[in-house]
Image 1 (cartoon, rainbow, N blue to C red):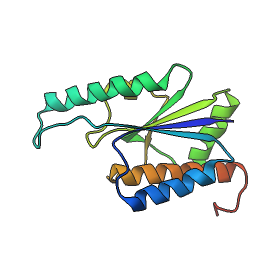
Image 2: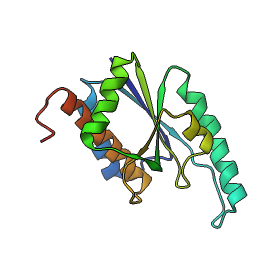
Image 3: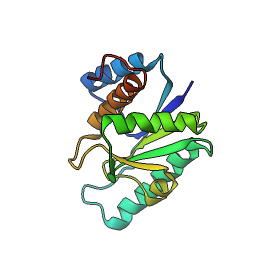
Amino acid sequence: MLKCDLICVGKLREGYWKKAFEEYARRLRPFCRLSVTELTESRLPDQPSEIQIRSALDAEADRILSLTGHSASLIALCIEGKALSSEQFAEVFRTSALRGTSRLCFVIGSSYGLSNRVKEKASLLLSMSSMTFPHQLARVMLIEQTYRAFQILHHGKYHK
């Protein structure tokens, strides 16, 4: 069974985000083994300099990359990534399985994004949209689209 790891910088705080996420996590159980790791966002001043932001992203990258391992296919969510339709996203799972990949590792960075080191290690840079979303919403959107992808692959009724 495919293992889907979600590494997030930051936590789901509000109950409604948690409930939505937990619902899709429950629905995913027949299709994959899901794990979620929440990393603490680096503390920065209210008006951080570019150097402070880069330093924080590098520290977060160290923690992220220590969790991904060599066998995982890393998918980094970032605004400059490729926007995929739901069907194209489902194809990512299908082709990963055909290649023998047993672990997909999705990464959602902090409010300042992801270090270039994480992006360079990624097999796919994925954009949810050219719009900006709160990271908590992006996490819910990602897990919903993951569930939708499995429904597409298994010809379920969820995706119409």
